[in-house]
Length: 246
Image: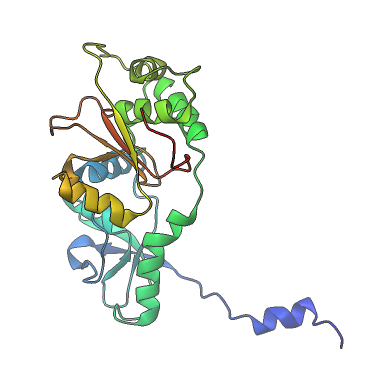
């Protein structure tokens, strides 16, 4: 049996359709009724900061009937900014078409399959923060989130505690004050985490994610204004389950 030529293989593959961008009035766009991912005001503030600095540089995908398939957060931020128009890519299917639903789901979920080197991320964020005239707004992180991430990505020989992590990040208003007590809790899955939050009466609005993968959170207990994001940490890591957190 002869091997199939590269040319024959290309003929068997479906052609990727070219999609032209268009500019549309935001008032004509509709959120997809099946979209299950929400956007906190904190996230929207970061998106708005990015739009102000760089414009809208990610593709907003819409269906044939002007329903959003990808980029709900970008559109929501643009609405808050009172923008009138936005650039989109229109797909030739109705929003109820299974192919549209697949785009909606993929836009939300494919990114979670990526691996994140949290240590490298902290180094990158520090470079940004130390650049003249540039802050972390628009990256999805702030100084306290960065300090909390630094603390869990470095050994005690490098970073002894949250105070040292805050110093490493150069937090300008760092006040050691009274040392807070901290508890690290790890969960086997998302259901266990949600069950714990329910029993502990922890409102999700009081949690703040400090990794891009959304698998690490921090909060105060009892709930208070979040000025020290390392008081309680929920982690989805690979630490030995028999190891007692301290």
